[in-house]
Length: 237
Image 1 (tube, rainbow, N blue to C red):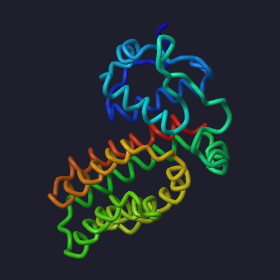
Image 2 (tube, rainbow, N blue to C red):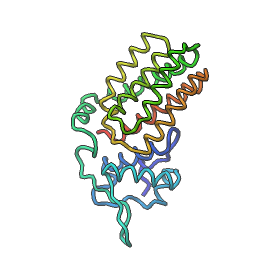
Image 3 (spheres, helix red, strand yellow):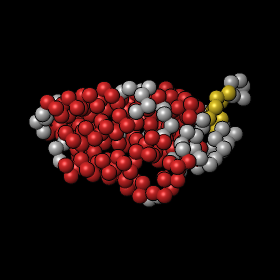
Image 4 (cartoon, rainbow, N blue to C red):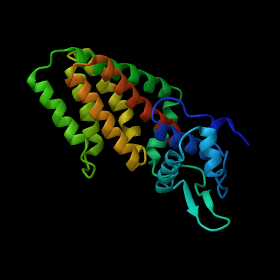
């Protein structure tokens, strides 16, 4: 059966969107606890993603506690999430997401516009040596996976981009957005492949800014914000 939720993945990062689609299907009961996901071949065809991408997405959900894989003739990928709070998401983050309600999509859209614009503006400026050094140092710190400050370092990189834009009003608005969303972003289960992709996007953003390419900087930042938004929509109630 072709469910609407299995619609083809279009645009953005295929892995992040596929993870979000599968998580949404599980949370919405399209595949109930104890039931098996559609066959890999069928899902890949309906989502129009490669089987490699689909397997990576399933692996992320398995690590996050949504599904488990079973071998044998009756094997496959089975849903083990029993409803309620999503695996790996703190209760206070769930409460905040529910409290925000319709304001959450608005905040995500606002962030995309603000941060994409900041990246483009930073790339259009003739940056001082201190700005360039801060961007490079913040990028390096954001890649430190084992640091307990990983989420903080990620936010600092975004704030460094905002600072490089040279607009105090824009930087203040981005700081407010980061503060609003930081608790939710920190609540996303840590998905290793997502971190790999996030690191690559951060590198593209900073490289484009340092190269003075506003179009590439905006596109890279918007894609980065879109990927985070997909995960939040898929993994939070």
